[in-house]
Image 1 (cartoon, helix red, strand yellow):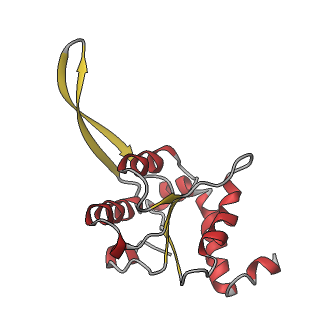
Image 2 (cartoon, rainbow, N blue to C red):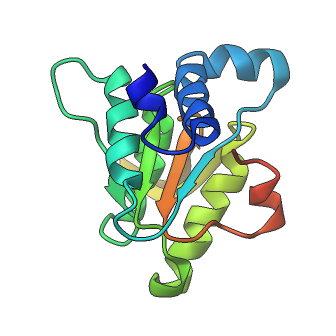
Length: 165
């Protein structure tokens, strides 16, 4: 444990460790308080952000490697589906660099970050066709997975900062 805390400043490592342990109880914490903060891991290139986060994410995976998703390389559906499929497994967004992402992608990720705090639902509409008849349908996705942004700079929007560790 001492070696782990010495990877970086002990106070930073304690926050990371505390957040990942609390993520296991994410749904209980949200049931009691209605909220669960996202985690922002930021620092210069090569500082070990992804490695450290992956190490801690192993707490959630037994027979397979921890998952993370690139901010720029995944479809919107991947983000909506992943935040709605897991209640306690962190959803890790790698390489969150708003200046290098399309404005639409930045808006999506910021929206997910804001709505994740209280596990709000997001909705997507489509036209369903059943038995030859079509009708409008809304699919709702709970934004419940603990959320982690990894990047070289911290997201500075005040609504996200107030909901982050």
